[in-house]
Amino acid sequence: MNGAAVEVMGVEKVFGRGSEEEVTALSGVDLTIAPGEFVTLIGPSGCGKSTFLRLIGNLLEPTAGSVEVFGKSAHQARMDQDYGMVFQHAGLFDWRRVAANIELPLELRGWSKADRSDRSKEMLDLVKLPDFGGHYPRQLSGGMQQRVAIARALSFEPRLLLMDEPFGALDEMTREHMQGELLRIWHETGTTVVFVTHSISESAFLSNRVVVLSPRPGRIHSIVEIGLGERSEDTREDPRFFEASTEVREALRAVEDGS
Amino acid sequence: MPQSVHVSKPLRMVLTTLVAIGLVVLLWEGYKWVGQQTGDQIPGTDIDLLVTTDDLTMPHAKDILGELVSDIRDGRNTLPMSLYLLKKAWFTLQEAAIGFFLGLVVGLTLAVLMLRWRVVERGLLPWINVSQTIPLIALAPIIVTWGRLNDMPDLFSISLIAAYLTFFPVAVSALRGLQSPDAADVELMRSYAASWRTTLFKLRLPAARAYLFPALKIAATLSVVGAIVGEISIGTKTGLGRAILEFAQRYAVFPERLYASVIGAAFLGLSVFGLITLVERMFVGRTGEAAT
Image 1 (cartoon, rainbow over the protein chains, first blue to last red):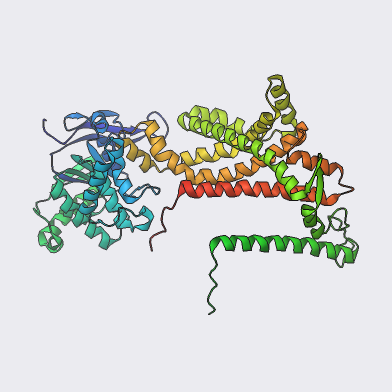
Image 2 (cartoon, helix red, strand yellow):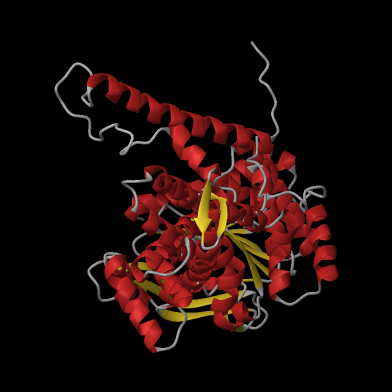
């Protein structure tokens, strides 16, 4: 299909092939993600959702099948730096100030110092940390560090954002706040997001579609369409949000029942 | 509650150093005094003390410290012992410095090679460990003989001996530091399509600094030890090692002199240790206090 942001076809991933610890992490996975879409991958541990994300980012190579990103091979897309990545732990470099952390991908792309500094200021505004460019990561709270990591991932305006449980280490309040921030940024930038989580409410609140995975071997069990439209903090108390959450929850129960 | 007295940091360092020296002197003299009272036995027993406390074995602290300011002949000149030792230490410092930098370059190179190729790590690491089990005293004459056959100055041979000691902590700790970044950090660099070299310079080397500097402090003091042992086993005409060798031969007459020269060697070791600490502050810099 032309014009898809991510096209995953018949993908299989086997770790330690031929060894005694051979594990099939993913098997027979097909998924198409449209540009501008927000897709969440959810499933019990061991279902291969992080592996799935890393295959899209070409941090892992599939054993069989193909992964295309914006119509090119995943490898080419990584070489072209078409996506930004955010991990569970912010992974900021301690020895760099916040602004220098955000500028790291720009530095690697050979941007001039002035351009880099302009962009990191913009990004700090976007994640609402305008006064923290000169701080060191350790001086920031966990939520603030994660916002810096998002700013770093978005600094070069990638068309795709890959997020691996980015709010998993945050407390509930910070987490909800960050979800709101992420949706705002998503609206402002129009980027495609693939988001891994193990939180049902998070998946329902954030995404257009929730991809529910089943474990051993990881497969797509079902895909839940979330028709919530534009979200706000009120959405969290909207009956339709409960319905959406329930639908995801029931899909996950079906996974555990093995049906 | 009493207010704690605020003292500036350099002053505090001087004070703690003085207190530490005072404590050592007190222990020394206290032990000596006890030994004198009991006839070199542990009080209340017939068990002999490990070290006898006569003035030949343990000269009084004031005699040792006094020796540092009393005159000694150096060729045709006469000068205070402390200056004499400082002059000798200058030679030793040069050998140690060359050895230190050689060890640094060799150690870092080995660490990067071991990082790059697993095979190199598996093949080389055991030999790096074995290298430190060879007695320096056996190795020194070999290095010197090679050096002289190749028209190298003895100073360089001694530096090689110092480097032999210093490359080890550098290689081992640098490798650990280079391998210290999280898998996620490495994945992040991969997501930027960063080359191995870029990842080395932007991620691994900066991350290794925290591991490297403690090892550099050890390496710096080892370089002094290596230089002194090198001087002693070669029989050079100058340097602290030479001074220690000479005073050791005349220990029966002037025991304080050997102790004074040992203090000189310790002082040199501490100086290079302090120097590396200063460089560390410049290179590692502040990374901020932890969030409250």
